[in-house]
Image (cartoon, rainbow, N blue to C red; front, side):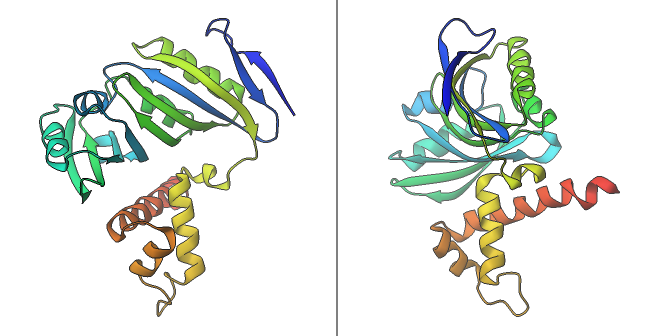
Length: 235
């Protein structure tokens, strides 16, 4: 069942609301030249695909993203001369696809901090020269409204594209991304955590169609999120 509503405070254009159950998912655009990686996407005239967003060192966001069909040397040069990027590490570096982890030296718009305060994390995003297109889950409409209001107090323009209710993702309770959740479940199912192991990192990477370096990063960050949301929270 679905219906169309206008989102309050964002003009008269209707936003499609699809009714299902449990939690609220939203796809939206964030427009601002100050958002991370927008200048990199503009210089390279491409779209970057963000795979993971977490807290990095010094409580600033750390991103894992990929770019296809881009000269890897040009990409490395653009990342090196951006003042907001404190560190960048190449996970893969080919013309077909490059994957990087970048640690930011700040959160100039405060957008990611607002998402964290609401216990909401992006589950997918792309970056263009104009800004970010993001998919994220919110606990309910009030949390979505709180995020929209927080954006209105910054230079970031919030534009909702699609909002729909969906069954709650069990990973949401622990701050895991969909990729981290999938990797941890696959590792458990295939015996990666068993002693002795029934599968190694290469076996798991083949199963998930990714690289061992990217998967290792995903598992470590997933473990960190689980610890932060469970035993570390009670200490």
